[in-house]
Amino acid sequence: MLYQPEIELMPRAQMRELQSRRLREQVDYLYKNVPFYKKKLKEAGVDPAAIKSIEDIHKLPFTKKTDLRDNYPFGLVAVPQTDIARIHCSSGTTGKPTVVAYTKGDLDIFSECIARSLTAAGCRPGMVMQNAYGYGLFTGGLGLHYGAERLGMAVVPVSGGMTERQIMLLQDFGTDAICCTPSYALTIAEELARQGIDKSKLKLKYAVLGAEPWTESIRASVEAGLGVTATNIYGLSEVMGPGVSQEDHEEKGTGSYIWEDHFFPEIVDKDTGEPLPEGQTGVLVFTTLTKKAMPVLRYWTNDITSIYYDTTGKRTHVKMGQIIGRADDMLIIRGVNLFHTQVEAVLQNFTELTTNYQLLVKRDGKMDEVEVNVELGTGLYNALGRQPLTTDLINSNDRLSAMYRSLQKKIKDNIGLTMKVHLMAPGEIPRSEGGKTNRIIDTRKKD
Ligand code: ADP
Image (tube, rainbow, N blue to C red; front, side):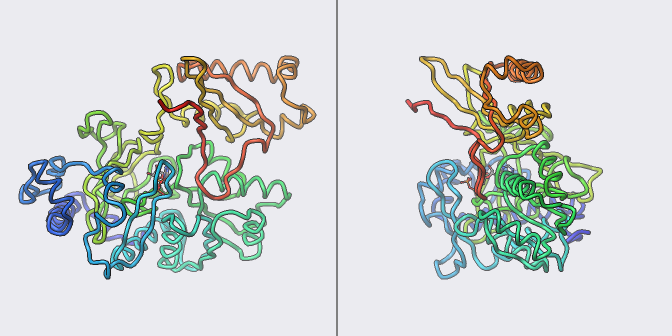
């Protein structure tokens, strides 16, 4: 089922025409209504009249997070204050939060995009949606809330945290679908197992997960732990919020559809800003095509991924791959570029381990070091008599020492760095309570 078949199946030529018209209107609108953009376009020597089609988008300058910060709080707003219907902030995972504003019309499109996304995720009108995204300044809570209502679902606005209560509601309300961060879905799955609840007794069928990077191994753990089909939802507040793109529940692992009638994506080289061809990995850049309160031109998301047209997919819209990291959380360790998801990809080959891990980045003298904390699965931990995981224990147990050696070797072979691994007991690494998980603890002093 598609929520808006006429848009989701739009032939490419027609989509290009729609995008071209909307881009012309958006550029013209910003030139007239936001002094910042007028100045920026003038400085870049771009006359709005030169933007005739979507192919001309590369002529426009980029907008970066610093532009939003420099114009804090409302300098990039294009409408009178009285037309603003809601104000959100980015969650500020990296630095000071940035402010975003919406008109009633913007919120309407926000809900429409979420309703489209939830439909792709498998949700249907009449189902119960447990919304475990944080309510508040973060766009996830209210975004999913109104979008699920728009689709015709019954929304349980529980917000993140209080895991035992989440489980009570899952049981008592006959929740069909849950939305939250992938790390929080894992926390709920663990609590379910801890309480010995039989997941097949739950009605729960779908999990819509986003707001932080995740991998196939996390999907497998969430699906097994909660008995659901889990799909990816992606977005960022500067562009709208969640629901900029969404994975279809019957096309898992092939990427998420970008709702490109509203958000035009590009992939560019992270160093030169030059556009990259379909399929290549670089920085994702978005231009909003229909926003009114705070449109953005070529917004540099800092998220690293690729985009491609899946000719076998249900929809004509372009797909994006998983976010492998943010350009600004890419670690450079002794000259090697490192995203934490690369370590995760190695860990997922070891059935003795869980997907709960953290990277500790340290500076030892002049050398940067990365250490990996990872939890052992309960199976092996119990088989070891739940003893402290000391070096002596590892060395004296054949299975453990073989696994440990193989893990260190695979990290070295696949990533090119030697990392010290600390095996930890199940539950030892702090759990997500609904927010984004911090996978990297960087204790190096910033020079
Ligand atoms: P902040 O930038 O402060 O975290 P946002 O709440 O706007 O604020 O978060 C948007 C960012 O969250 C995205 O740019 C991306 O890095 C990350 N994100 C959102 N959804 C996903 C997803 N499905 N997969 C990976 N990363 C995601």
